Image (cartoon, rainbow, N blue to C red; front, side, top):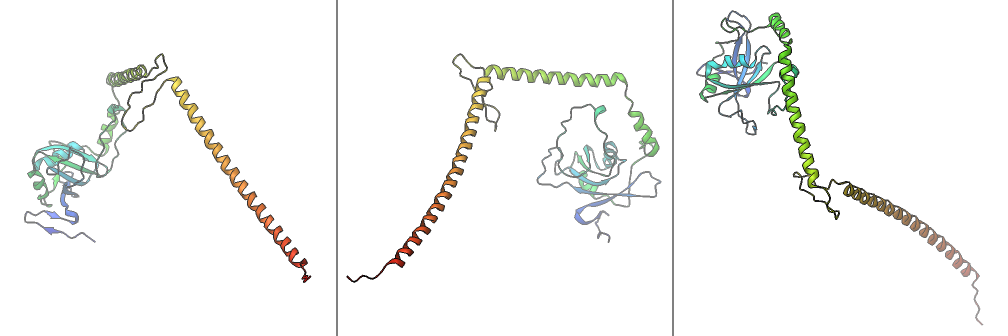
Length: 281
């Protein structure tokens, strides 16, 4: 069952959820059309500062052949585009912490995506929402063609071959950053070791660590003392558990003896009652 639609004064087609339908054609002479669903980005719990609520357009059903540059060119007719962000599913994305070069990163998945388009002016969002569906957006034009099919595969295959000089520069840059990071880590560890060395009297200066982590001495003697203390606690706990078990056994034996004595007393009293005779004189 198709979603109910209603016509606005400007000819925009709005469906359930407040999304506006925009038509998309790959080429001007294409017969088939594709539909995009756009909506003003209004998420109160948005943590990404790169998506201002008043200037961000949320787009669904973006085809795989539309890259960020293509999407930016498509929506530039509604106003100046500041940035375009494409992802596999909606939601807040974590900042990219991968320091690897683009030559060593895995290939992106080819699928329909969602997009966040940030305009420089808030009026551009309203213009995109008011665009009529009978005026489709054109992806590939003569001025800016978009490669698909066999041509795209050939282009991507050629991009896999990297010049040795370019690859060597990327490797050298990564190793330089890695060596610098290792040197900084070694300097930090050496500084901490110097601060926490024992003096002549055996005292250790314990520095305050990061928040939530309990600082402890790192000297060999202090570590040995801590291990001995832990062993004593463990042995004491085992000993206490043994005594508790022994106490429970003793209590069971005591109760059994009391019951046995009670039965013997009952039999002796019964015997005395049976032997008792009346002696008036």
